[in-house]
Image (cartoon, rainbow, N blue to C red; front, side, top):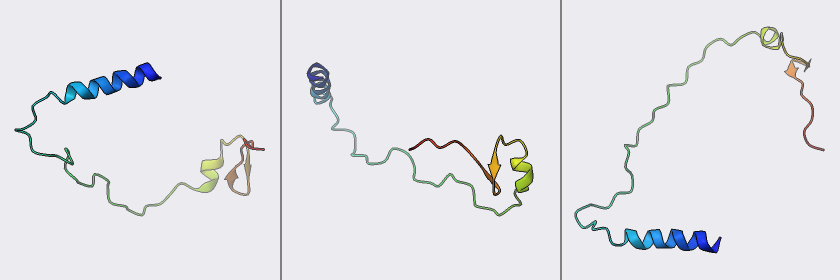
Length: 69
């Protein structure tokens, strides 16, 4: 990893040579705008329809094998 870190640091050294005097400091390059849709309440599928093809279900939930001891 020493070689890789040295290469990364060398890359930063080359960036120091770039003339950025005509560029104003920038903290955010994209506009800050929410692109999420508005939350709307709508009917969901019936529970029995969702669980119809489930390999296993228990008490109205999908039942899966445990993955932790």
